[in-house]
Image (cartoon, rainbow, N blue to C red; front, top):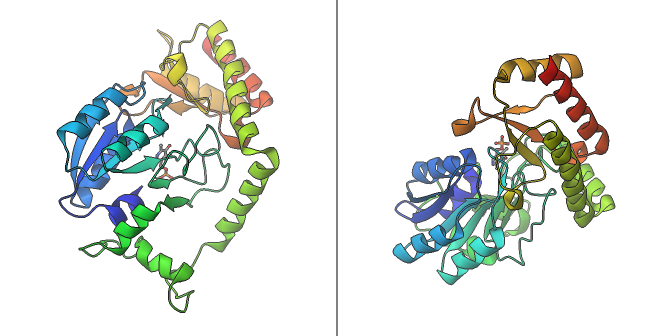
Length: 300
Ligand SMILES: *Cc1c(COP(=O)(O)O)cnc(C)c1O
């Protein structure tokens, strides 16, 4: 996230930032820290980014240079229409900056087809890899911005113009930083596994495991926060049933079943649980364990 904003946004640049959860808010903080002007489009937590509102903001701010949004908001479990938002950005001469930390490998994501200009992900979510790496992709337009900036990129470590000369600059392989090779081998393995399964098959597996989990939760009388058509299969955000103690249930699951579910973040703290079904973890035995353990915990 920071690598995108620090490389692309120059002081004074207007950035339209969509905020419908914790990570959209983190984008706002990144824009501010690099001296950009964040124009915030708020949508309710637990819902997708409202495309109409974004269009109004683009029309009202013709000088805006970027549109930034989170594809899969992990804090609330809502997916936003990345394809429509990127199209809007193009129509208004804005570059898109997209958070795909939780979406990559879990749901449909088409970087070039949707015309995404800058996108980042993480190794530890649906790629099921060790944490610490952040795959990043820039379009030609984004690369040109990095190369033709007026001001120096404030972070030396994240400066992609230096990293680009490692890949393809004069002489090539000019030293920038020591690569975390162990983690890169790990990422390679996780991508091999994804390739062997097939990306589309992985998307379908996340969806079907989510549906099994949703059915089971319904039987327990538990309600989802996000409306069906905006739900992320890999992050199931549910309301804590009335009269149930948030912390007691989560520690019971952890101590009796070695199963950890997420607490609510930000506005949803104390009101929600978040059940992750990401990457390798999105499989039948885990869904069955989770439903049985949750039923027991609620009874207790
Ligand atoms: C997890 C997550 C991040 C942050 O990833 P870290 O590796 O913890 O910094 C950012 N955005 C989204 C949508 C995430 O789910």
